[in-house]
Image 1 (cartoon, rainbow, N blue to C red):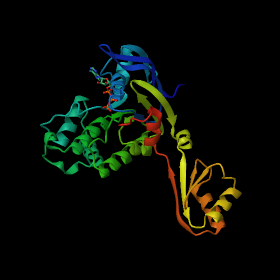
Image 2: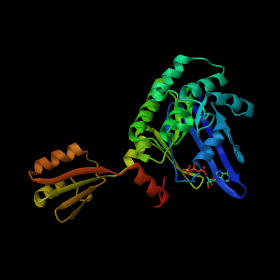
Image 3: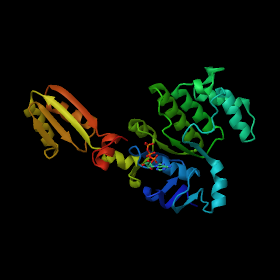
Image 4: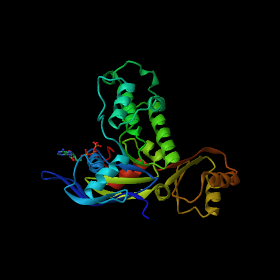
Length: 306
Ligand code: ATP
């Protein structure tokens, strides 16, 4: 049996004469966390809206939890948790009242779950404060809590940490990782904070001008993220001898008292041993890895604004 939660085939979306999505083909597997990356206007929200049933594709087909017929897909959408905007949240209700209203809409009644959710997203102390009086970060947290109420199997989150402070961002990250670990929840998440996405995602989908330009899992991505090592010493001869002894001639460039090693297969620890053997006094020894952000920029050819 297929473990795909979602299969998209040849999805196109036009707004009048403007083509927002071109031939999107994607398979999302159960239990994975997909980081969805693209510049402003690349088509992320448009695709998420199509998956969620808030917009129809101009052409193309989809299978959601293995179901392909329109009526069946509609029913399967009950298993989705979608956070695209502050949809369904009433500005004049408090946090608890809003969650209660969401539950009633689903025919549910569970005060314990409401308290638990408020605790999980850190909104227990908001009392009689109404949603419209919330800060942006508080609004994001409550919208996320409302999305999680029905314990969805597949979460679609469009910039869920937008407007959150660093602690809030970490809280949401820990929460999503926990849900994924404990319930095997599949997550499709977009964010412009690529450092965050790197921490949470198992797989990355890059979109540019409406086209999926790359899909890559974290392990192969890590292999591609080149590491750079900087070594500074006044005893260059000793350092160079040691590095060359280990066959590192091709990877090194020398500039004054600084040696840069790029893309070598050695770990920081292994290089540390080699440098220790050289008996040279070091002024600096640091290893830096290319980031998801620089990878994205090189992929789209310079102009980022992810
Ligand atoms: P952001 O990171 O800024 O949220 P995004 O990747 O989510 O961007 P979309 O909102 O999907 O981008 O927009 C993709 C393109 O489709 C944009 O050029 C946008 O202007 C256009 N677009 C989206 N919705 C509509 C609409 N209802 N009518 C016309 N054009 C639209």
